[in-house]
Amino acid sequence: MNSTVIPDATRSAARPAPPPSSVPTPVLGSALIGREEEELVLSVLRSKALFRYYGPDPTSPPLMVATLEREFAAMIGTKFALGVTSGSAALEVALGALGVGPGDEVIVPAWSWVSCFTAIVRVGGKPVLAEIDDTLCLAPGEVTRLRTARTKAVMVIHFQGVAADLDPIVAEARAARIAVLEDCAESPGASYRGRPVGSLGDIAIFSFQQQKTITAGEGGLVATNDPRLFERAVRMHDLGQWRDFHAAQIEAREPAFCGSQFRMSELTGAVALAQMRRIDRIRAHCRMLSARLRQGIGGLPGLTFRRIPDPAGDSGFETYFWVATEELRDAFRAGLQAAAIPCQQMTGTYAQYRRAYVATGLAHAPGATPFHLGAAWPEAAYRAESFPRTEGLIHRFVVIPVGVTHTEAHIDYIAATIRHLHSELGVG
Figure (cartoon, rainbow, N blue to C red):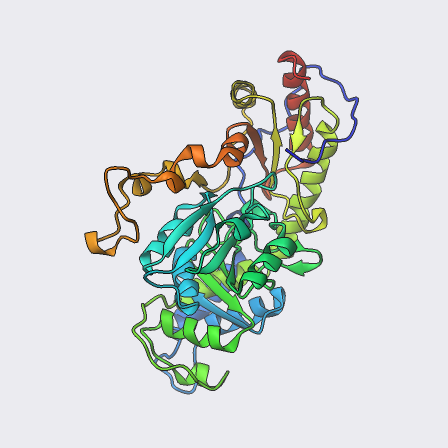
């Protein structure tokens, strides 16, 4: 495993004194909800225009979702952005915009959130599971290894605040003439070599679910620089329609088709807009704490940090390190939990080949499954033994999540606890 080895450190391994206050449950944008969100939500309620495209007063059109789209696109450097109802909906909209359907394949990391797999099935495509590397993101080389004549796209997931190693992956996709879909649900505000995630592929998605960096409770967004993909995304999210609002943005060139209904409400847009305007504060705080934690546990023998392709672009809200065995990981987790230190990921991630929907291979109706079910199902491409790199990584890491309510004192206590456990467990 070619991970970045932690630099030398010589801090004390004594049992740490507890911080002035208990280590908080890690939260990000939701902890900052306050006056700005209230004012924008109240302005929507007072207008009585809860629907994004029109309200009771024709002379005063709704503004929240439209403003969110405009400011978000400017923030990440894309021409277009489209608010939708959730990150999962955003994936379906993006896949629909790319034209993924029956017979098409989409390469997706085997270690990912549920929707990354199920959204592909929902539009009729077939997920093709790929290995991850020590970034905990898609491994370069997997697109070349897995692509076939049926491959339509690759879904690159920027996992928990860190951009995937995009340059080689995008180069592989371009050589194979397949689209790149960036899943930025867990990483708004992250960047890769100076460019915001969401602006580097063909189309991208974001999530505003409760546990995400910025939240509206639920909600999502699709972003792209491609006017054709934008038009198709608009039609996909609004029953195939093309309204005057979007006609003022670009000229329609696509025929109408049967879309879904994933329109964002003005109330969701109001909260998401206020939260988006906080992202610099959230990112700066978490980056500072992450750097302090790394400094505090750097150099401990037998601990290896997650590799970050662009350290300057890390969102900073989760720090990962590996230990030698699963048993040692469990011991670290038990020690951290005994010290009242949260050590679980802030959002769920799973080995897809171990999920129940993969075990059954079923969609919502028998004829809708993209899989060839039979006595040998799951076939080899959906079994754990086919993913040795992924399996070798996901059972040995320890994660330390931090949020906007963490302080430097909390981080120093966490670092001291890890140093104490390292000594107590005889690691190295």
